[in-house]
Image (cartoon, rainbow, N blue to C red; front, side):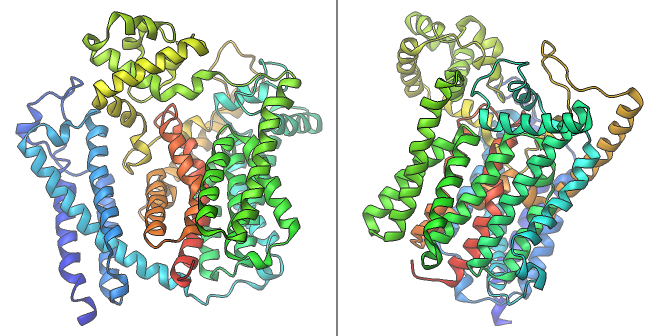
Length: 613
């Protein structure tokens, strides 16, 4: 009993408080319900907790019972940085819930009852997190130290076996979606190389050519556009499966635990967030898969330098270059990696960092030549400036809408040179920047003047800027915010009616397809809402797992692990600066989601087994 003496009161307290918390937080409090929130809405009325909140509690209770059976020792007691993480996570969760309900802090700050409920909820979440994190540490150690052996066929074919498993388990999704899933952006991207839409690097021309090549091959071989789309998706699946299988092969060479390898393969092949995106045409999957391969190569160089040869360094540089041209995020990730590696080398002066720095620098220089020399020489224009300024444009629009008296006539004139000032209040939407962003009509000179005004207004009302940002992106941090990308990613007609329609299907066949898609959608929803699989398919769960690894690596001074996490941190910053989460914005976080199984496996194996850095 002495091994669980500490965990019983903490666990019971967490269980009881979380039960009450997740019941009370859904109940209408009369004093709160009578108040109108800032946006002119009333708080919802739910007399009982919904199934979506009851199911996680059932899972937590089960984990609590398992936690009581886990050996308790000093090594698994939480350290300061872990309590800090739980406090930040719990506080952020409460703020996210308030923004989910009423687009502001009102659920926390409306009155004393709200504040007391928030404090009660905060304590419950922290205690519950302590219980789960301790149990998680126990499980991580068991996985990292497991002697589970891999199948002989996997050991004999370290690439072919995981590649076949991943591809074959994805294939049924592609068949059920036939001719395939494609959203409006990917549709227009496919039309560019076909000469049916103006070409530019707004959607990376490299992935556009990749899609068009597969499409044309399928159309030539099978004589239909539908078959062309299906062929392009098969090519995408092959590329993604190859990248993920390559990363698993490298993890095997690094002697990562067999249990971790099996779990990683299971996540890639079975978790529906991977299968439903890789079987729908989209540049994000190509980029994310290439990023997984790059980080696995970089991890081998950082942790197993003796086994890395010159050809491996050349392959790493080529993979980094490929990643950088597949998505506009790529160059930003490379520049952040360069800065982090340079700082790390200045501190440690380690040879392995110089090799990695050279690979990243070489890829970055070639990427700049590609973007600034090769594409312009081929007559391919770059993307619009407005894509970079989604975040400040949203902040300005909210400022104009909710604090118009704070805008001087001179400021209004400067804003109007960049955006349609008179339309900002009407076009502003809390969760999508496109309506505001599409009014952009400025140039470099007017942008400079605008940014000065933007900075002044932000210093004047930082609360408005925070609300504008957080309303647009809190889904990346709030597990309860669901973004229904399944319907969007199963359509194959474009949203733009002025664009030529290249896909068609007889009515009877289209009806059968609709039935298949409805069945598939129900299956995906059931899978992704099941408590056991929920963390692997929820974007916020992946973001918080990544942030925990960052904090833990920093606290333990694990420099190499921190360097591997730099691309994920950069990806999160790009998501925050992006146009949305709630309108198919989950795909912007795919780089984080795709690399998390790899990084988590390395974290469990390296961080818990090797102490020295």
